[in-house]
Image (cartoon, rainbow, N blue to C red; front, side):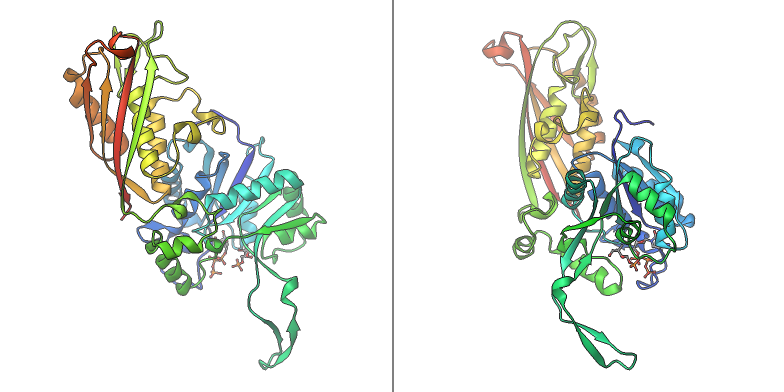
Length: 412
Ligand SMILES: Nc1ccn([C@@H]2O[C@H](COP(=O)(O)OP(=O)(O)OP(=O)(O)O)[C@@H](O)[C@H]2O)c(=O)n1
Ligand SMILES: C[C@](O)(CO)[C@H](O)COP(=O)(O)O
């Protein structure tokens, strides 16, 4: 499937390492952390970026199909911008394999370790913004808090390193595409431990921006346990307070386990076309006008689900920053909303939508519509309809309103 837009940002997610230091039977990216692989967790943030990107997953040759399934699940309704390629013996070789898969239209490249699986989407957005504003390489990094010693072969301290000169580099690291590709082509060896080193060695400048505490690399079993604890405690007040305000929405969510949301949508009847309501077409009924299919039920449902998860509303989530959703159908909006809920760590429990209007006569198709919406949402959706005794715009037959509530809970 080809995307309905041309991304200019490409994200290479390197996931081809064996994870020798983690020492599990699966390659590290395919190790599960509370029911999801590290790769899938990393991809949730990639697909949660403000600007949709081409995503290239670099996987072990033995796990290409598994990576594709994980990638498509994480991509949700926009699978056309995701591809999988086999990695190499070293991280350097894996990045080269990823670079070779970028579409011609890509001008900014981010390279990210799947091993940094809890990195929030906001960290990706910050790197893209910094590459755009500088036109140079960008590395998120944390300052070093420990005293650093230079040691001899016998373990003796030879001297002190001034930690004010040091920063611990994270990923995603971002670069202008042409310069990064050229730097990899000219690299004299494959021992560089990150992309910034390759880029600098080619004579380009790299800037550091503030990294994120959640972007730590899962290297050992201790790191995996730390990630597990952070996720389990995610909605504990203390943990949330410890995360900077710039953290992704999932981490900023309040402490409730179950949450409710509300949504309202109104569309006027237009001229010609087919009516789309609750995911169904209604032959002989007047079309609802709007920039999409005008499905007020689907839109109210999305708003209720987004509101329950404090993700904003349809205008904020599917507005001008996401042109691929212009004129999208109700199904596309609902499925993408569910994916965003999942990224935020939530799942729907139940939703209810009431249609307010004179037409169409809804009850004969209620069960059909409920079954369809339940499939999209992955939870029961109850539908009902009412009129307003001839009062107001719905009573005058000028349009349809829909009022929705949704219950969501933290994913188990
Ligand atoms: N041949 C390789 C080696 C590493 N990586 C990726 O590079 C990132 C950083 O590497 P690291 O954390 O060191 O992962 P591993 O090489 O898998 O771990 P280890 O060194 O413990 O084996 C990881 O996301 C890893 O999957 C890769 O794509 N291809
Ligand atoms: C790219 C990196 O994560 C930046 O800190 C790091 O250099 C990877 O190093 P590793 O030796 O592959 O773990």
